[in-house]
Amino acid sequence: MTLTLEEANRIAAGAVEKARQLNIRISAAVVDAGGRLVAFQRMDNAIWASAYGSQGKAVASAAFGRASGELQPRADQPTPRGIAWRTGSPNRSATTRNRSATSCSKRRRSCSAT
Image 1 (cartoon, rainbow, N blue to C red):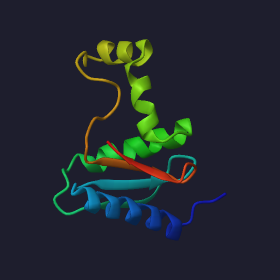
Image 2 (cartoon, helix red, strand yellow):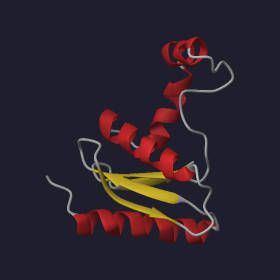
Image 3 (cartoon, rainbow, N blue to C red):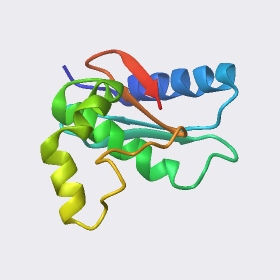
């Protein structure tokens, strides 16, 4: 199933609307099954880094076929923790913990804000 631009824009708009309800500012990235960006929206005054975080979360969601919120617990497993340590980031997990980053997965028809 191909993700159309209209569908991607509708998903991103839904994420932005949910963020308004939660009174938070986000960036919403929607990618296709191959992890290629189809739609992107950044709310006014959203932190600048959320643009990068949301795209990374969306790509990870597409790559693993899971909502990005389901990937958080796996980030603290021994392998990602070891990679983070070896790359000089011992105090960071392998995932973005930016509340302003949102990703949407058409496959799961869900969005997550962390």
